[in-house]
Image (cartoon, rainbow, N blue to C red; front, side, top):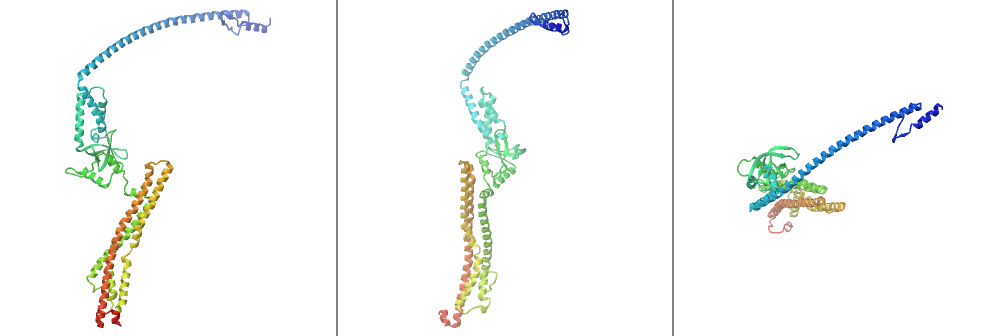
Length: 471
């Protein structure tokens, strides 16, 4: 047998099944004897491994039996404990029911009293949570809320504190108190400050009005403060030590004060009028300046005319009456012999003074007429803005329409606001100028009558018509 063929036979014999286990001989077997020896050794090793595994399995089976027995013992003990506790629970339930029945029977009218107490505590929870008194005495809301939701009967201490808090709330509501606490500034920072509390209505600190936050029982400065008058009253109250001082009392516990501070100021209202409002204000301002200038001028003229009336024989050029008198009395050569010429001279002198006396009155009448018309333009523009907001959003939300409506109303108010005062001012200026012109006309007519009388005296034809006497 050749060596290669012998190796193929050895390879086939290497996969002979033995007790269901395939023995893999060593690859170095070159003869049948070596292969037989290797197969015998492999069988011995396999038998030894099987014995070890069987011993391990038997050992594990005994340990599992012990663990199972321990678990059964523990389960039986737990079951017994459960049965014992269940029996004890049932016994406690019966005893608790008996005790509750006994408690209800012994409570009598006290049960109704405790129910009323819890109801009162619940009603007062909302009052205490929004009361300014809680800013000085924090922690009361928690006590009332716990007492209102308590299932057990209240103790004597709780009943006494309930009575005490009710009495303190009534007493502090009618007092003006000063106390130190922390307040929250509009920037969100906390600072120590002295607070003046007017009952349960208003709280002040350093001339600023405060609002109460129910949750953390803290006072915060209003982001926008009310007008100067209310701030001045707050400062006076802060600085006062005795006596009586005027102050603001908000019966709504700060709600009205907060709403009042949200009202827009004068400049904010003017800004809502936008471009039309600025035009109306410009017209009114120009009219006011013209009216003030003309009023001062007429006032000076009236005083000068009054002085001239006391000295008609000494005409001065610093007033209209003096200039009119100087036209005929200053130079005798200018006095005409003809009455018609004299009358024309008088009319010329008066007409020369009239424009300065009636200055700016035409513009004031124009401003009075233009004010309501400009206001009407602003109203139309505001309504256009309102309708555009409705069209764009598809809803008639008052907040969306407020801008347009505010612009319309502000423009109308501004237009009427300049027209009505300028109307009265123009009437006053016209009255003053008419008074001066009346004095000029009276004095000029007197000059004319004096000239006619002098002319008649010279011709000896008193009582005749000047034209006839001249003929």
